[in-house]
Image (tube, rainbow, N blue to C red; front, top):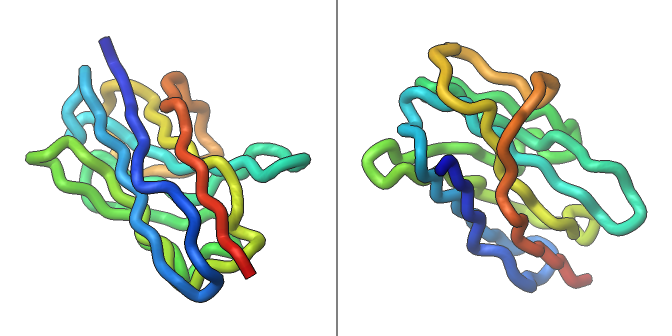
Length: 126
């Protein structure tokens, strides 16, 4: 029943911006930790950022710090990843994940996640 659906990926020029969306069903966002991960071709999956059951967020990918912002709209059950000043190195498939229902105030991409979306492709051109 728990499902995550990413959207908003596409092709963007370097220096541009893109906002990814993750619509969650089966759990309300005030009871769920949501993580953003990405996987570039030939590279391992990397934790990007997360948002807690509250509005507490953190960015675990050093290269994304200061450029990416995570937010959510509880009423829409949607989490967003605002990506600014995009670089070709940001090219990857982006996934949103959740640990399932919980009441943790903080979050971390280093924690285990149980549910994954299908991913949305982000391609940044030079």
